Length: 147
Image 1 (tube, rainbow, N blue to C red):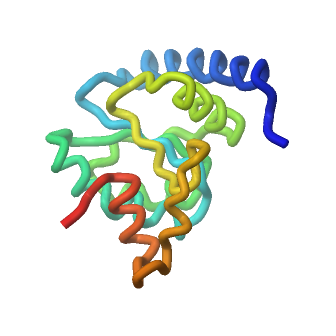
Image 2: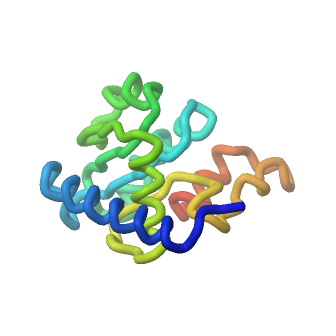
């Protein structure tokens, strides 16, 4: 069974507080995209980083701030000029931000780089359908990049 209503509201409030701190500390405004990466590993995060440049170019933005709990991301962000910084958060902090986002889409320039969350997102089930790869699904679902 999932978490209760009151606990979700509490997590969302904590997510809001965290978001406001991040906005202040990293000067987040409409000139930067924030990519929230709730998963670990190259399987999920490799395509997110790979297609980030294409996504930013399409949006007319030069760089992004990554919010992650994945060490793999930190080892690979230096290879990409369009990543301003990678901020490391705990799993709990990431869950708070996602809970806040589910309650209220608080920023137009945030992308939750997941095929499974927020709750109800089922992009992972598309992998393998009609030959779709994980990369293609991430490119289409997370970034809305289609040919």
